[in-house]
Amino acid sequence: MSKGLPETRTDAAMSELVPEPRPKPAVPMKPVSINPNLLGYIGIDTIIEQMRKKTMKTGFDFNIMVVGQSGLGKSTLVNTLFKSQVSRKASSWNREEKIPKTVEIKAIGHVIEEGGVKMKLTVIDTPGFGDQINNENCWEPIEKYINEQYEKFLKEEVNIARKKRIPDTRVHCCLYFISPTGHSLRPLDLEFMKHLSKVVNIIPVIAKADTMTLEEKSEFKQRVRKELEVNGIEFYPQKEFDEDLEDKTENDKIRESMPFAVVGSDKEYQVNGKRVLGRKTPWGIIEVENLNHCEFALLRDFVIRTHLQDLKEVTHNIHYETYRAKRLNDNGGLPPVSVDTEESHDSNP
Image (tube, rainbow, N blue to C red; front, side, top):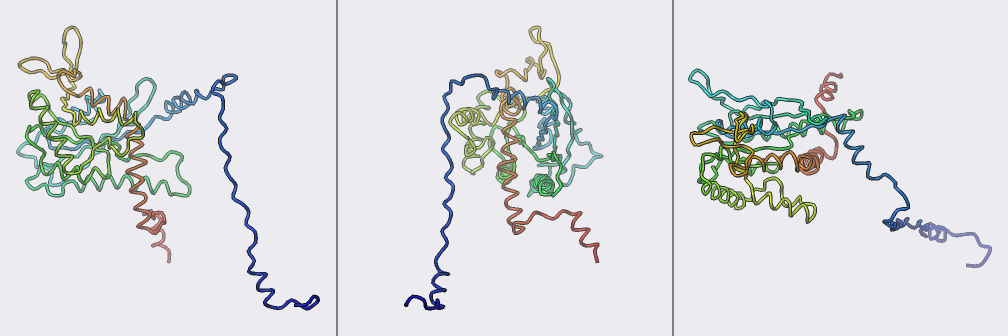
C-alpha cells in the first residue's frame, strides 16, 4: 500500500489484534541472610511472654467429651484429671427409674484457675450410650451434637459484624471408655470410633484397669491396638498430623502406650507419710498417679501438660476446617444462612 493512502479496515483490525505488552510479574526478593551474631539485643524472644500475659488475661476454652457405658467411672476419671468436681456422677439406676431410651447430651461448664491462668472447661457427658439392648446407631446423637457445635462456630465466623472472640463450644477431645473385658472390643466400640474419629479427636482409654492383672492388661492393650489398626481406625494423635521428626518421635512413644489403662479416684489416702489419690482394696491402696499401679499419669500429662494446645489446633485446623469446607461447598460457596435471617426473610411480604 502506497504512502498517503487512508488506513483500510484490514489494517485497523490487525492493529487491534496486536496485544499490549503485559507488565512483568514482580519477582519476590530472596530473604537476605542475616548474621546470627546480632549487633545488639532486639527483643524478639519477648513474644512468648506477651502471649502468656494475653492468655492469662483472656483465659482459654477446653471442651472434653466422655463416652462409654454406665459404670466405667467416666465422671470419677474426669474429676481426677482436673482435681475438682467438674463432672457429676450419675446415680445407679434403681427399679423406679428408667434407663434413658436415647443417648442424652449433658454439658457442664466450669472455670478452673491455676497459676493465674483461667481455663473455661466444659465437660460433655453422654448418659445412655451403650446401655440399651439394641445399641444400633446410638453414636448418631453424639455425632450430631459435635457437628452442631461446628455449625454454631461457622455461623458466628461468617457474620459481617462478628464478635471479637467467638465462643468456642467445639469438642476438642473425646475420651472413649473401653470396658476392661480382657478379650476384645465390642462391635459398638468399633462402630463408634470408626464414625466419630473422622469428626473429633478420640482418645481411647481402658477403664477400671485395676480389675486386670499386669499380663492381662498388656495383652488387652495389644489386642485393642491391633483391632483398631485392622479396622482402619485412627485415634489421636493421628500419624498424618505429625509435623516433623520431633513430633513423630514423641507421638510414636505415646501411640505405643495407648490405649492408656487407667484408674480414677477423687479420694485421698495416707501412704508412706504422703497424701495420695487412690482406691482402697483388701490388698492395699491403688495409687492413681503411680505408674507402677496404672497409666493415669500418662493420660493426664498427654491431655493437659503436653498436647492440650495441639488438641485445640487439630480440632480447628483439621476437623472444623473439613466440616466448614464441606458445608460451604454444599451451599455453593455461600455462607450458611442463620435461622434469624431466614425468619426475617419469611416475615417480609
